Length: 132
Image 1 (cartoon, helix red, strand yellow):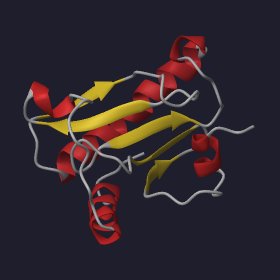
Image 2: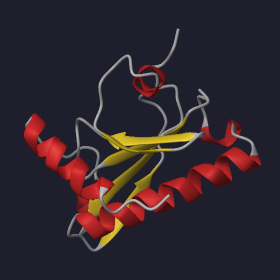
Image 3: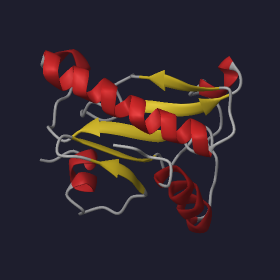
């Protein structure tokens, strides 16, 4: 059975897509720690990040960098934090979280509750900065 991320990539589940190429897909986390919290996933369904080939891992990091630069340009913050936890969904995913302090990337923090309109505005602002 396909993971929720594969179903998002395939268009079976809606998302706020940020960027896509032949191998990777980025979309807003619907339970964000901060506005602009984005997930980046490889299109190939792989459970554990270190099971990716060298080329896949390199591609994931380089694609994530492009998305992170767009987020930082669109969302006021000091840095984009990066987390790869990998237990929530059995599909490799990189969290890109705008942050001003270490506390901003604490996954125990309450998640933001944003309206569809807020998600759309955030996505549009990031999309306008993406350079693939």
